[in-house]
Amino acid sequence: MGKNYTVSALKGNKRFTKVVYDLYGSTDIDKYAKRYADLYKRHTKRFDGEVTFFSSPGRIEICGNHTDHNNGKVLAAAVTIDTLACVSLNDDNTVNIASYGFPEINVGLSDLSQRDDEVNTNGLVKGILKKLKDFGYKIGGFNATTTSDVFKGAGVSSSAAFEVLVAEIINVLFNNGKITKIQKAVVSQYAENVYFKKPCGLMDQTAVSLGSISGIDFKDDKNPKIKNIKWNFKDLSIFVVNCGGDHSDLTGDYKAIRTEMESVAEFFGKDKLRFVTPSLIFKNTARLQKDISGRAYLRAVHYIEENGRVDNAIAAISAGDKEAFLKQINDSGESSYMLLQNYYTQSDVAQTIPVAVALAKRFDGVRAVRVHGGGFAGTMLAFVDMEKKHDFYKYMSKFYGENNVYILSIRADGARAVNI
Image (cartoon, rainbow, N blue to C red):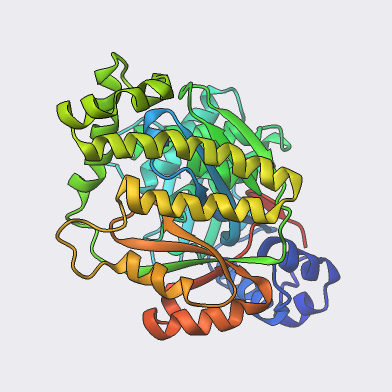
């Protein structure tokens, strides 16, 4: 097709029609033709050369609420929102990335060292390039222009989408696709940990890189076991609702969950709950309640049972048993509410997440609902019958506004080049 990435040309391109359905679960060709054409036009005003498009998805946490920090199990998935890039090679030995609404990134390949005064997206890109080079892969200069609908502040990992996008560009343009999906995730995590100084786990990058659904077992957190699972429930739509609330003063609440779980583990001479025999916790209920706290005990029970729900959810998806899957999600939500106790803080009279969940449960067509991510304030996850998704969108938008209600689907592909 060459450089003819106009709206009319894309709308007449059958390959593009398939791309829109595969990546976005949509038949709205007009919307995506305009998005790609606008990106191409913006890129070619700034950069020369033949272009390739790349897409990297956002992700959701389906099950496994507050388990990863104690070497637990999680279930995450790539979804149909993405960071989209228009990319061309250059001979300048630099990586230049122009993103809508952000300062341009410029990284020279001759110096990829970590700098404490560069804990920003420039440093993040440096870290990805450095780790790939250390692994023995080729790196090179390219120009990219990006746009993203991976919304911030709702736990869908806009940072991981960007990181894995950069790794995939290097993979395709300079390494003939030889870099594995897991290596792209590991490289991205390294960049965020070391160059961006954010101690994230591997869940976000893995889900973005693999696509579909990823079951991750962090028992060995240096070498987690990862299972990629095909999504079988195309008659379910997925919603993330931004319920509101202020995260700025919640650090202590998040920290307390981990601290209390680890205090129970320490009671049994272990550093993490994963290494405590579950039956011992139940046998010592009275002592744990007296010597530590009742809340710490309840959070430990949530942890134990949540790991089991992740296993059960994976089995249900693999077997195509939708009702069994939905039960695990609803049970996870109830456990987070009653045992983990991260739906609201003690002083929160607004109770944004409980109100959103209560509203969702009143709507006919909602099949499962739970807190999404860290909790206390923020977002809610809901699975809705596909034929009711537009009605549910209108219903929740009345309370939270259209810009805070997101309709998603599971995306089969992780970060990839888009051939159109």
